[in-house]
Length: 223
Image 1 (cartoon, rainbow, N blue to C red):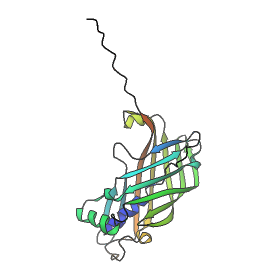
Image 2: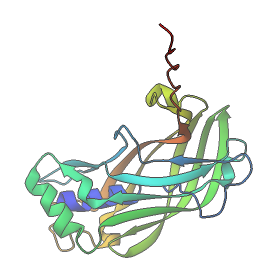
Image 3: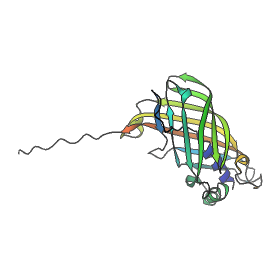
Image 4: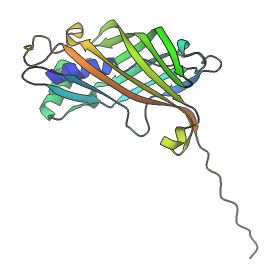
């Protein structure tokens, strides 16, 4: 049960950056967080007296519209698939997914960016700020405010995924949420599951296109 609440919180706070249906503004790029390498993940931990636990979620999708010249205009949304939640103990994994997070009724957790509260350019390509986002879990939406660290790497996508030309956007944040705000594992003893959930987000988005293979030269018909 502890794991369920922890995981839920983790998903919700993954970081909201997604693109709207309209075209992105001039200079902005759309970064896809459905990582082709499958390394994007969110981890969480709860330091309960009897059962401190750590888990993670890897089923992350979403997109962000980001302009390195106007980071304050960033928009987006992240979605976490609850079926991707895992703990070292398989029993905890099932408890979190099907009891605490009620996977069948609420299969995803979403986090959507509302506004940039404050921010600064640390140096070229490196940004720090405080953001306000709507986190929805188990049908409950609450506004959360947390610090965010972003690094923009132009022209480096092929270093991660050789067949894609484009840019990378590295997103990091650490924060806490309260599981009771989302009715996660409601009624479980405090000794078994703490109310504060520590969340660590590590995501890389890609804005680019798949590289076109150069066709092999046609063989001459002459011997």
